[in-house]
Image 1 (spheres, rainbow, N blue to C red):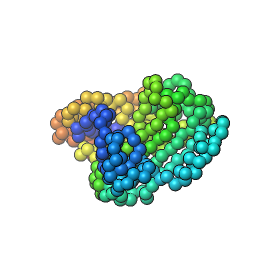
Image 2: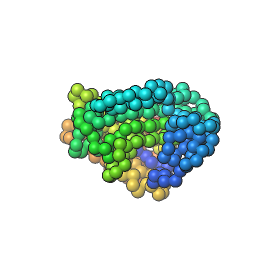
Image 3: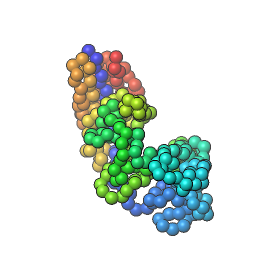
Image 4: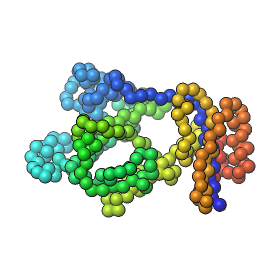
Length: 296
């Protein structure tokens, strides 16, 4: 019998925030719906970084490398139907070296991608391709995409709010759509593994080991030990106050059974006693102050 049991302890309060609807500057990066450094909330303003810069004077820096931009624009202007240049994909990386300090902020990395447009070879098939599913269940096809769902550009950038690795970590993301009419939903999913798509088989590979994802394991002090399965942990009730939970996950490949059980234990000392006692009783391996038994 192959059984896996893991304990997850949540000690710190978790806060839930809705989307920002007021322009702000965070870690010296403008979050205001435009792409322009030294320009904030509809007006020239020296100092804030952004994705690009169209020549506005100031100390603010552009994040994405613009090498070859003039040639790209010239190619678009001279393109003719069926528009092979305009429809093609390309990408650019960060304009400064990774892990460099710029404007007293530690820039970790950045990426810009122009997606395929029109007849796309990397399209999700119609039907159920949900972010909560395993990528193994996603299906890709070659087809056109409705304008309201067609993502043209994708931006992502990670930096620290100061020059040190201990300063607050910020991730900024952005997308542009082919059309602003109709309803659509999008978010930014952060996977630990490198997911890739094979066009020949129209399948995804490289996803996480835990139902296609990778989740978190904490020790009794609240430190991250390893990303391990935590399906169905139910964090909705943790948004407003500090609580302690012990989460036991089990999976039996022979029986085809799996599940998760949550125990709320408010007394910290009891919780720190229960976890090692159960772990040792089940002959599991310690990892920090948590216990686990890997797949065999």
